[in-house]
Length: 187
Image (cartoon, rainbow, N blue to C red):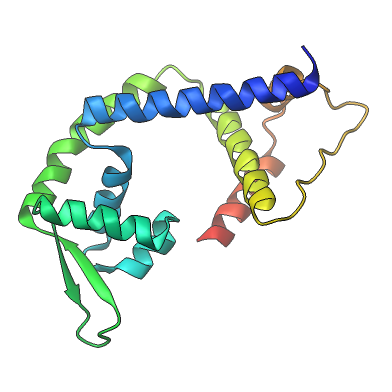
């Protein structure tokens, strides 16, 4: 298999894994992942503006509004115009919404434990680093910039498998620090 075919296979595997995760999450937790993320963000923030939710969740404003309307129809949130700025819409959980989060949290924790418990921490860190790198490249490419070419050195493996193995072996603090800098800038 060529290097390009390996890359394509990894992207396909990522897509399959993501879809499988979303489906299993909804089946186990009882909520679709997009709705759950919104409920948790509101739960964490108390009364929050829709604008702050867009920023926190990194979601399109229109998509958020559509999700909020469906959650509001369930009676789990209340939306209101901000008292100080009528251009701002605030969102907060209702008692029923808090109950839905409280009910879903144990199922969510059991699901995540079942999925991730036997992963060694070093593998999770490496997976996280790889996903962060993939996300940065996706953002770069979608912003119209050419994807950055991979930096090759004599010691860097040329296959996707070799690169993964090298990342697993390396686990350097440089990668962790770079990952934290990216997350800090995104916040």
